[in-house]
Length: 103
Image 1 (tube, one colour):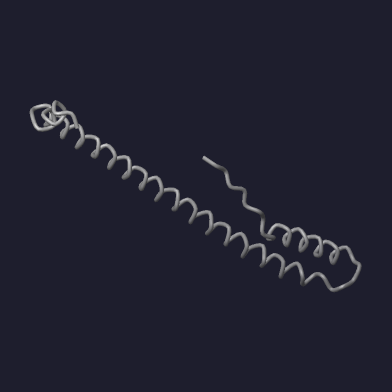
Image 2: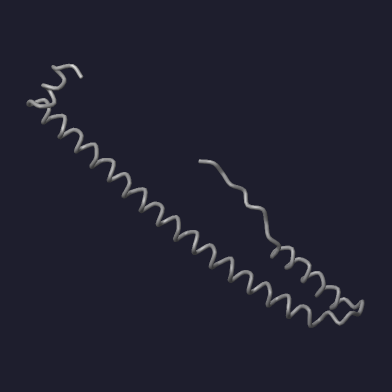
């Protein structure tokens, strides 16, 4: 290390270096805190979406059960409509591939 740099770090300029380093660390900590807050907010959104999805699944399964009551195996319009509703709802409940977006 050059001697003038060592002297600068030990002298008045060194105090400035220490202050700048401390300021930089403080800014980095603020960024980390902000990142943590954003991550917490995003997790709350994901949790809310999971709850909504579960409620939707429950409602769809209830609709399937109710529609199945009308499906008596006959070829009547009510039975055909009930089978159509069941097919649509089962399709909606089928797992969908998740697309990940890079940021």
